[in-house]
Length: 377
Image (cartoon, rainbow, N blue to C red; front, side, top):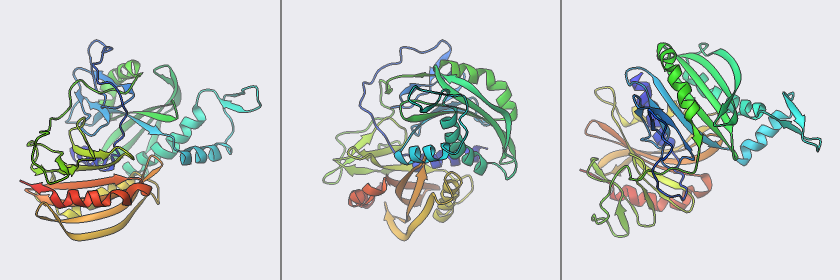
């Protein structure tokens, strides 16, 4: 199970497209008694977990876990409704019977509880992921979906189970729609963990609130603004890692996540460096990327992933690396990636560039410059 958790974190870091909102950095004044904040920087809500739980926001996703020895995690993610998603949803829902609807005075039917739209999102974006993660034929509904509330917003609750890595996992998901986005709360736990932690999860749900984008008082990491760097570039890493990661001065370094990354403010294109510790004595670059590929194929649509090119013999900090360019669809939105992977001192390192298709080529020269001056030490 630890391997599955590490793999999921790996994919999450790989597919992260950094989004940033201007806001004031402030302390949380609404902390419930006996709970602590598990909200990632920039999230427009507050997720609180019991003080006995562990916060996990390292990769920019709000969440935490009860214990590391067995799967017992909670998370909240926001999924923007793109124009393509809205069009497909409207088309699909026209073919469905309207349940619990009323007219709004203009003859248009209104989905009073959000059931139709939320169920469409769950069926098209959540269920396929659970199906791919679970052993074939093992995914089953535990409880029929029920109406719920998430911070006073109409929501729907789904409870399913499946066999993952030989263990029975329970998936509890609560979804609401607000301001052109779906918000997905997930509790994933092994059978016994699900039962023992369900009361805490209900407490977490009861204390969840929507709010202005959150930023903590202090940054997660510190950088030396006066560190030496190649002309026109700046250091985007520190001595906590075994490499020097430089980015153009025009890029903004993200200080609110544990991974080292930077983004181009104009269009949110990003570059990150993610280390990975194999759970075997050795792992090749090819084996590592095969793991990434498997996870991506399992978490997108049938045609949502495609490897566009593979270039071997790339230099990354003096190590022989391989560059992979591919397209991958996340939450209904397609992105382009250039992932450069190298092995160094029993670790695998990925420098990954992420952009929307229309902006991908614009920043390739900057990304290539980052690759050229990258250093291991």
